[in-house]
Image 1 (tube, rainbow, N blue to C red):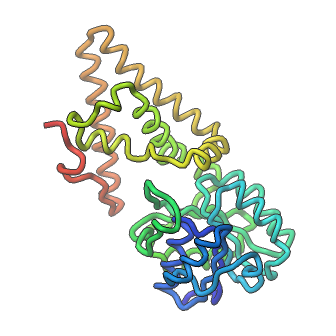
Image 2: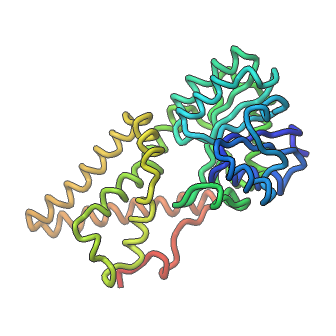
Length: 301
């Protein structure tokens, strides 16, 4: 049985809408939705994603509030409406950065008798919005939680149950800063790379010359620039370090080519292959499988 009877989600986009669908499908709790777009609210009701939809009055009987908003919007929403939440309510977010969110929202919640834990479900699609929401979005995914020394055990247990209820296969517990350090590498840097890659003057002429490699590298370039500017800026120190590392490795390739140094290039390519093979072994040992089938990702032949 799910540990709370009433969950309120504010922000019924891809993540919030998918959480709503999954909670309705897999728990017996009442799911209420809040969104600034009346058409989204109507759609969520008609499609059965939520039991109730409306404005901030939906907060008054929330036992668990999920802020499915960008960091700045989540902060502003909570500060404006925090007085509506009942004492003891558990509050969490789904933001792609954690240090600044936890620093702002945990003390705010504590001062109002609420319990906050940072959260980040590692799932998504290239497209956003409620129309893309899917109750299976989190199936097999990882859910990251960033409790602190002041985290309430009951609240942490509730969010563990949330991750399980929506279908996540792995729960990762980490510190907010370590989350941001790793996400700079695993999520933000690939978006930087994809965006830089497709700005090549060769990109408009790729049709007929491209296959899996082009699709794999460019897939996440279709970002919401408003959201990702915010995420990048809030994690600019860690992301800047990762970009510097990438530039150094790219420069090694360029310098070997410029020098006509085949032996050096061979070594660089060998190092990359061995790094990826070691990575695949770690994933296999962890029970993960991320290697694409040949038809999906291998156009080297």
